[in-house]
Image (cartoon, rainbow, N blue to C red; front, side):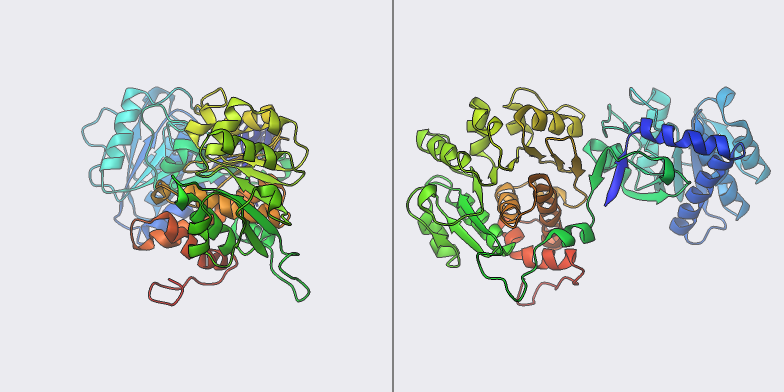
Length: 488
């Protein structure tokens, strides 16, 4: 499980390292790690063109020292200085000694139009308030040029704590970050600007606090997915109840039930008003025509996708929330809860809410630019776990623990994919996972299924259901099959 940290936590961890090592040693570690990644990206170094975008802080020094190492191996390095009067002098001298060329930001020949690689050292983790016009112009030119773009620690213009971007940020294909991964690299707009994140160890581990948030890996999720044993039966593996769909939205019932089944609980009971569609699509599900209370033995409930918001739906939601079982509330159920959240506030059993941004806003405040803080705030206000959907889904527990999902694809922005996520998470709740962990693991598997489905183009929500067994296999380390195999 990868820990994610704020800028303040990183600075605090750097202090004892700086005080116990020779001056400049920490920067040399960072610069060497940066140069090593750049060497790998360039492949052949001699004669390749590298442009350094150099600001006034330590990131500018990192870029200069790394550029000097590349120049020493035969790269043709140009250092573009945003403020020549405040540049890191030792780093600048190293570039010049290695044969690099130095120009001001206003120069007509920055090399960005023909660079093989561009290193962004304009701003560091303390950068706030967006890029100045000269830095923004360089960031845009780098994105339009042919070079592979590499950010130092955090792409300039990205808030290291929240991932927020004001207007323009450096468009990195790769980010080389030092000591620990910053929250802003994996959430909000920052995730899109950071590209692939490479972590360089500079000796901070012993001084880092408990992470501000966590990111699950495939192996972390695999450890949380139930595997049937020789003594298991359909009841011991978890029984999930689904209340989803309606005459208007029967597909929500089919997708949610199918996702729960494909996630492999012991049994799925359907107790909604789209019974005919569920029977036709999933004969493996036990379909009840009555109310949820009459469905039989259930170990967790999913309620809300496509149910509508009429009095009947409100009554069913209240009935499910009145149980002492884990409950996931999604979609229309969230709309009803926003009118009266008291049934959730009074629960002692695990509860997971799964809003997207517009559903979140119905609870009284917009998400804003700090998605982790927003999810934590709603979890604290309602006393339950909150899964805030997005390009990087955030899951917050009522104690403040947060997870940021690392999988997925923009192709997930299509109707019905949230119903699939609800079914996956409901199955994991029924298997006994705590609410926040069930949400985080479900988001990870959901994202893996989407990545598999999107390998061949646009996806539909039903494609996710079909790819779930392969996604679970991928998480467990089993190579995915290709289309044309019987599973596709």
